[in-house]
Length: 444
Image (cartoon, rainbow, N blue to C red):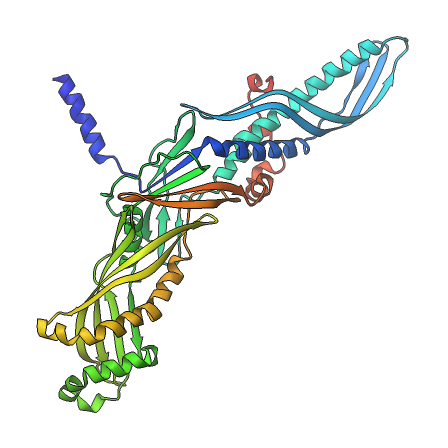
């Protein structure tokens, strides 16, 4: 009975677990690049430390060692690798430092060079342990973590819509990669608490050839389109000279009889063409490509000055767009193309037949007048959750059933020090005392 109860609880938890809309895998191929940048940053940090003077007296021996500076850091053996349950492990062996300092020595006995060498070496080692270990600890635990604070988690995409990249669970490390699951959901800024239930296929990551892989499910794109729909962005109204001239002439000729019957006095009034998406568009991802299905209403009317508009026709438009994804910098961009287009009347089959001559000019109008505006918005892209200063290069997009993956290599467009200095917490600029490790760490 207890076993059945435990099984029920497991199924219940699984049923309510939120599926990720976005996954990111960092492979071991990225670690060498990260290690090089990290060690370069540690070198730069050590060059800035201040080591106090070492002075005193030992019997008849007087000494004063001052102006100690670290000139170089040599790490003959270092390794950065993934480790299960600990995410990342950095091992440094056989490290050495180059120092420059000024010495003043006064002694009364001859032949004491060996004693002096041992004494100075021991004293310098003590000073370095007291100064360098806290710097390394501070660099790793405070400054590098401040770099992670630059990863966008929840923020605005534009003036209408935001995106949520919250982690759904702790990262999972294996010996060859680090996998992270994100909510990957858009939301209208005016409805910050709104969320679309994720019923899409969970994206999968299997590849390991590139430094980074990002997977997006259909939910990722569906939440974007539904958010723009709820924000009222998926509508367009063309009035007067905004309507292409050829289309204006064709529409007036098509509805000439209706105009004469309804209101001949307004025959020369400006024409209005209004498109309004009736339901949130839906994305379908297949190995053959990505498509977006849209259903919209098309209303044609005359707009006489200072008078109510005169509606000539109302029809429904079904369209299918192809979508090509590209990753540039660290933005996922989309290029749309109109593939299939059909209009039909809401009134009768006979009127639908009468609309056939409008199929071609309306499709042309969409391709020339509407698609560029859509692509101008979608090509701005949405940022992928990467720290500041890191971008993607040499990307490749692969479609699967229900999701797509983007593989890429990493590039440091800015040095770690430049990014960290820009985002360095104010209370760490002057002193590092608050981040000094416990005595057991300082002795490392």
